[in-house]
Image 1 (cartoon, rainbow, N blue to C red):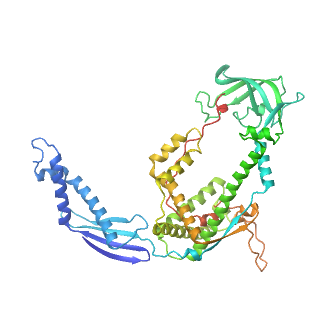
Image 2: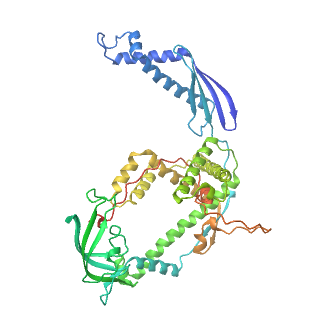
Image 3: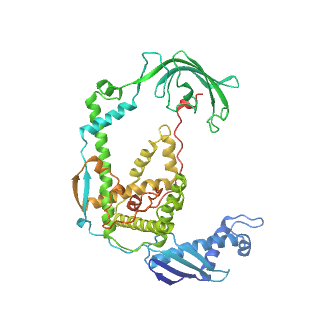
Length: 493
């Protein structure tokens, strides 16, 4: 095998590889001999099939296998002999081959940049922290209480309004015939909750206890039951009573309904949850500050292919967001060329940070264990109540989905490693400062008064600060998770 480097520009390397015909012929003969010992052909005993017959019958397929094996083996050897670490899968192209002649192919590869991470002990970082104030706990309790509605029968029989609840019986019919699942007695329906199909609840607003109403609706075309999809239906509804939401008292009884012993225990639980949320936010601000500092302290070339791939991912996200929001490129306050230039810079920063974190992990033997991935799979499965086993098995069967969980775990472990070496100073701030979006920070006013400009259209693009702070990582193709189970009440009718 002869390997000739034909180009070396930046992080790109080009090679031409020549494999002698005799080496290929030797491999083909060896493979055909193995085939001859296993194959059974009429008129020949096992292992006694002549080589010329084997070449006629199996020569083409064996040659294909040998070429693929040879290219893979020799290309890998060429990279190893030149001590190269590919940044992406090399591009290989066979440029010359005829049976009985030498094999010639080219390798185009982008290599990992050579750089040395900074001394992290010289890194000075600020970590924002915030205490959970008593009034914030009280606000959280009020929100919880607001979600726990307690309906009571109205003192006087008045007309219902949105936000009330009705105690009803109903019978649903299509073409005058009652259908399965369309009948209920003593059902409590909150008006405006959207529990039933569109139009149903609206027709019950303004009704009183004792009223009988014929509710006319049309089932959606995409309704879960094919027998009812798109059909017109009539529901004979009897209203027994109108109920109004009564304020929920935040006391020991309320705490017991929430599964705790008393109000003090409930407050402790709420405070603990808020402290955890504040801690996560504090960690995010520290990580953001760290990535900014790392970006400022490291400057090295990144593989062009990786930068292009990252840019394409960001740009696709941007254009999809434009489409979802009904905007056009010309609606933006920057030209397409300016936006592409800005997102190219973001892509380069993200790739550089991703390579840096990967290198820190490599040289410090930071790895993600199978147990850690397993725990992440369990956590993901819990997001789909009733389908945990199905989601867990989906991850088990799909290595790429597992890698999508492994990457952020690895990143967090590297960030923790760097934080232990750096000098981290805590700064007490308000919860508003802790949770503030860095993109919303006021910009320094220009010294000279600028000419008035037309207010730019609201961008649909992803926030650039958030994009820049996210290190690039290999992504597994997104898979659509099974939809969460629909509320039973929507399928009863």
